[in-house]
Image (cartoon, rainbow, N blue to C red; front, side, top):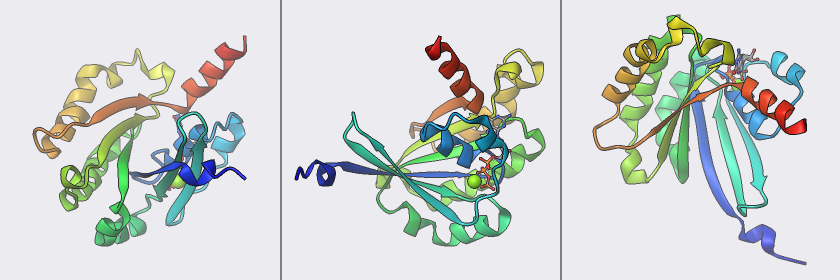
Length: 185
Ligand SMILES: Nc1nc2c(ncn2[C@@H]2O[C@H](COP(=O)(O)OP(=O)(O)OP(=O)(O)O)[C@@H](O)[C@H]2O)c(=O)[nH]1
Ligand SMILES: [Mg+2]
């Protein structure tokens, strides 16, 4: 029997963000879920949900840890954060871009996480997903680069110490479906 399975590199990725920001949905898209109904019937995640995804081509196994974002859980994680980040290679922080009223809460949670971690020392990459950036928002003034910069981007960069590199992505479950449609033509 081949031992290729054991040779796979394991990457531990943590996904954090407020409740309802779209973390489980992002996990589903990573698992190549294409049935829209699966996204509509989602329930809040209780505690931590760990999913393993294998990438045959990259010979890598991803262990993805979703941290259910409801308030009672958030407080708990912050008490034990160092334990969870052990051996993590990447943190994805998800912000629901459509939930403008909760931007400040999302930024507060981000700040609390960041203050407890030494990402540079632990060699953890950071990505921020501005999620639910659905196609119809692209031409909406409320979500223009200027508005997003003053409400989110500038505040994010003020939280992150200078010299620490991170990536910010606009994400939405809908482009996955658009892509699927195009590819199948
Ligand atoms: N418009 C839109 N809705 C989305 C998108 N992604 C997820 N949703 C919806 O947002 C809701 C919450 O999604 P979840 O993935 O369960 O959110 P979560 O961050 O896992 O929530 P917790 O587990 O409670 O922390 C669901 O009704 C999804 O269908 C998106 O890209 N666009
Ligand atoms: Mg969830």
